[in-house]
Amino acid sequence: MNEKKDLFEKVPVPKALLTFALPTVISQLINLIYNLADTFYVGRTGNPYMIASVSLAFTLFVMTVSIANLFGIGGGGMISRLMGKGENERAKKVSAFSFYGSLIAAAAYSLIVGLFMVPILKLFGASENTMKYSMQYTWIVVVAGTIPVVLSQTMAHFLRNTGYSKQASIGLSAGGILNMILDPLFMFVILPPGMEVIGAATATLLSNIIAMLYFFFMIRKVSAVTPITLSIKECRSIAGEDRKEVISVGIPSAILPGLYDLSNIFLNAKMAVHGDIQLAAIGIVLKVERLPNAIGLGISQGMLPLVAYNFAAKNKKRMQDAINTARWSGIIIIVFTVLLYELFAEQIVSAFISTTSGPSAESLAVIGFATMFLKIRSLASIPMFLNYHTSYCLQAMGDGKGTLIHSVARQLVFYIPIMFLFDALFAEKGIAWSLLVGEILGAITALVLLERWLKKKFPEDY
Image (tube, rainbow, N blue to C red):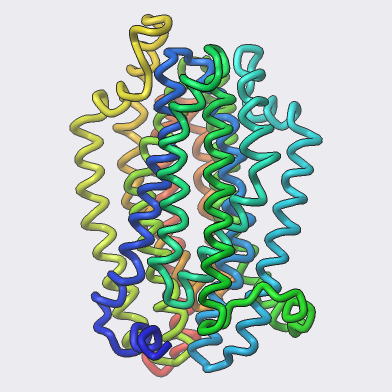
């Protein structure tokens, strides 16, 4: 345990940040690859309707991140802050409350999606051509799979925030690697032609269940030396003020990806109006463009426990060093990935749809639109990272109000209204450009909110 404490308090910031962030970035990239795997293998069919349907249903699946963030980041960040204060007994109660809260929320989400699946998918833009496939994917991955996904991510947050970033990343990465192995097996070997979407969904479900079992084992293993427990007794004895603090930070943390998903719902709906070809193209781009975003998110998540611990310990210099090191590291890496997208956009998107095994004219049209969309939307990766980074700083310091204001402003005030405006003015190309404008305005807002919070908490430095 002393080794973990030194990591928070004494190890040089660049090395400590690398220890926290590198496993997180790796797991984000592996999870990105396994999420791409469904699109890649479904793309081997050359069927644009299957590709579009997986994109639609995947939005529902990604919403599970909101539930995991509600209790994983809300509870995990508080665990780090309590460790910084030396209050490990309170931290145990917080971990138990957060675990069972995530379980109940996940079960409720599965039930709601199962009961209202058809109207939800229609709202997302499902057509007669895509509805059947969208329902197949949703039943398996979302209705049956939400609980294992949410519990895995929640427990990964607990491990990461107590210094076990490597172990958290192993669990998430192993699930991703297993999914990549199982995808072609279920899609092209076990199940007959025409059931490729069911095969991809089944592979994802099994991978997530196995990852969840790993996290149960790991939590049990480290519970003796960390303030993490799944005890119902500890859950029941948590103080009301601690429940309130978990929720106050967790709600904005949940709203952040939730509003991102909402923007993608509008994005899919808007693209569906222009046609299934455009919808399939943006479905590919939404997966491919996640490379720099996954790196940025991994750096930000790795930074969070280091910032939270030193904020609570009132070590502002070390906290600020962690913030600055993470910010500039992320910007440099993401600029490089954006350049790769600009140079090789067509080659990248072409890998995700076959032009020989399906209707070639439609496939070529999808590639054309996807190339254009990727070149435009990838430019937003830099301000998007600044949004992630600054929001995680606010969450680490317990500023739920600032996180909420930023989340709402970024999506509801900036991006979604700009999307509607640019769609009316410039059609599908305008929809792609709206992301860059919205993210820039969101990043400016986030940086202002962070500066105000630091002035409030450290007035002696201003």
